Image 1 (cartoon, rainbow, N blue to C red):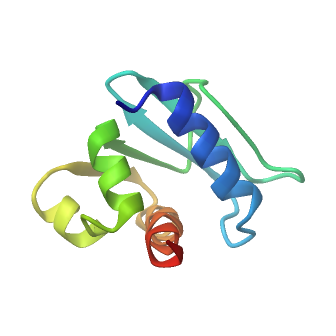
Image 2: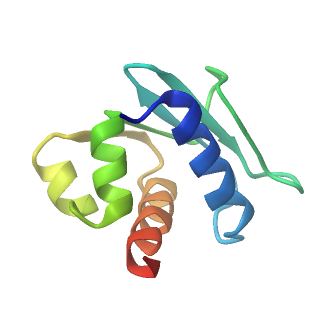
Length: 105
């Protein structure tokens, strides 16, 4: 079973290894938030509930299905399994980072 702590660490690793995202983003999960602040070096990830350029609301199960490649971003969005608030462009970059994880596995 996945936990907020595990997902936070996974996102921390993704952000550290991917320089393509700049700005702020927040995953809104039933278990809590995962906040990405990549406007500075080094980027950091924590569980704050701060304002972000984009927010993505989804479940941990959906997040891990995206990261495993079992579900793609478009399908998840179309089925209502994730909702995006704010910058769609930044959400697309975050989605691509999650998809790249699935492709690398």
